Length: 170
Image (cartoon, rainbow, N blue to C red; front, side):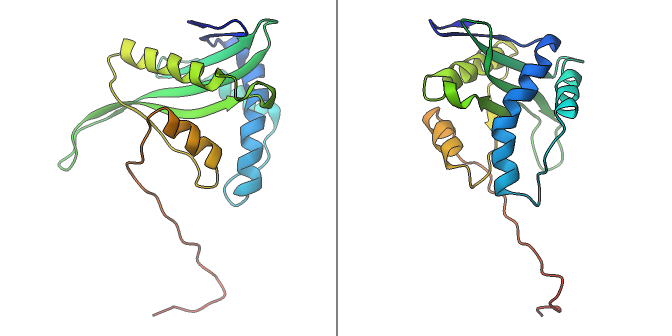
């Protein structure tokens, strides 16, 4: 558990699901605006149920930052991901960070750093030596934040949209 004068980071419980859903709205709205072909508006009840489902099993871990009044101001969602060995790749175990969200009023105060420190501590506790994540190319704020924590690109995904009104380009 990380303690700061203004907030505390703790492991989230199923009782935090509504707060997590609210915090998710901040970051999800960015995705809907920038990538409407991939993201759509969500029903808060569906988002809450998504978070409720994460508390079954132990592969997902959610940490929440709460302020002195007990109000949730940020969260991080990570998954213990194990990839089996194939003829081409080694087996790997990665603590994969799916979501990081900090309420706009709590940004630039170290809340995100504290949440990521909790993830790192949990990964070490589990014997995992690799953290991984992805972010959308439009989100330069996230890119700067993750780079400041030592994350480096290791795999580049690309896409190309095909026009349905044009014939075969060859």
